[in-house]
Length: 390
Image (cartoon, rainbow, N blue to C red; front, side, top):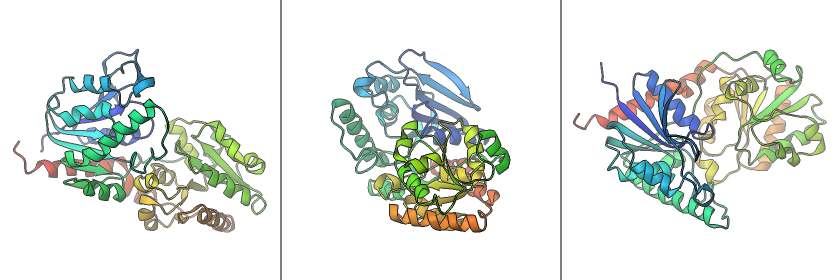
């Protein structure tokens, strides 16, 4: 029997949003495979205490943030980075950095106080060089954040012994930036038995007999596409409704009066409630504008919709375009707003005339379960370590 690996995840924060769901679920999966996993994080709270807690079988070693977040941001705060550089890290086999932010990354990059046999870097979306931070914002704070993040994104692929990414786009970019080895590791879900559509709608207060399309998530740049699609189909489908959770209430201002009247806005839902949300849908929506940020990422809701048995309408952008053709219950919607609107009408017409296609959840789990992805990551670790002396 192989000895368990000692694995350190270095992460920016413990906030349960964004990349948290990637590193936390991979850590849980590795722990369930018998590995020793610790997550080193900052909680962005200037009044908290250094502490060790357990989440889902994984040890979290958390430090508070220094003051001055309004000037530097917590993620790229130089004092946070320095303090974490000087922390006492036990020796490990793998030190795996998630995200390019200075707070977690400086210790990983410096390495003198973080003894590891190998250093991995995980890249799950593009921030700089045309990515999420493409729009320039005046002021020192955004300039500092952009400068530090750009430095990390350009430097870390070559510094790592191995890079993991969520998309082929980032894998290719990592190789161009000097990565020695790259593995594409998608985002996933924990398999579960979803509630029936009737029960899910009942528990969420949705209408039992409507044709529901839905969007969940906090990355909602293209939410106006959904409102416009609903608006264009109000008369064609009197029972069409739009379920929405995740974005702030202000997004409703983007909807026409007619689309707003057909929208069931559920606010921010706890993770277990988002499973009910997806189970209540006839069609999950995933609109993506064709830009570098969307090409770089793999939205976690692509798999989460399917996990609950919902068919998906998604733009053919980035990793979604690579994967959509493998699943007959995923409808492809081109790469522009015009394409999206046309595909929405065609798909809703088809579902209204027949029904949503059944989703093979077992097939989805084989491809996207966190346990399968964690096993793939463990294989990657052991393969990278195998040429090294113990």
